[in-house]
Picture 1 (cartoon, rainbow, N blue to C red):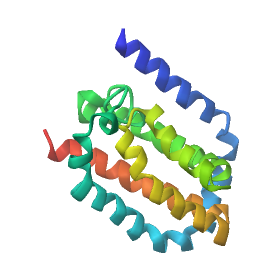
Picture 2: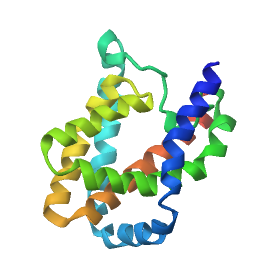
Picture 3: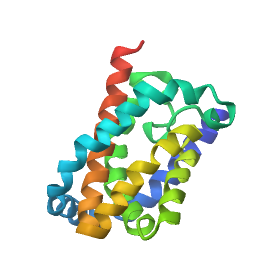
Length: 178
């Protein structure tokens, strides 16, 4: 029964992005136009790495912060708990989804601080623990800063590149950690 629920949840998150298929070329162009802001990528990746190295284990032991309805990010696919071969079939759809979802996130959630906090907390709906959602707050505020200073394409390009790095590391972790 849980598998059916996960597939339904995944379908509900994926299918709406198919409505944007005609905008894919435009979104990829938007990423190219915002590429100059990728100079911030070491900061976003470094911040996430610092969180993993210094805070994740500690925060994982706090019951309220370690709560997750699923235990992993559903974006990796409904079979992510099955290892590398449970994830790989979903990677192309994940990349496609992120092309569109990251733009929508930047468009709607960078207008003010409250929306940026809501953006971070919405990641709990994707199955990540509360402490991971809280760790996303600094990234959200950096994206908001870039959005206000340079425009949506710059925040979008950085957000998308950060997510691509996270996806690559997540897939790589299946190869390293049995």
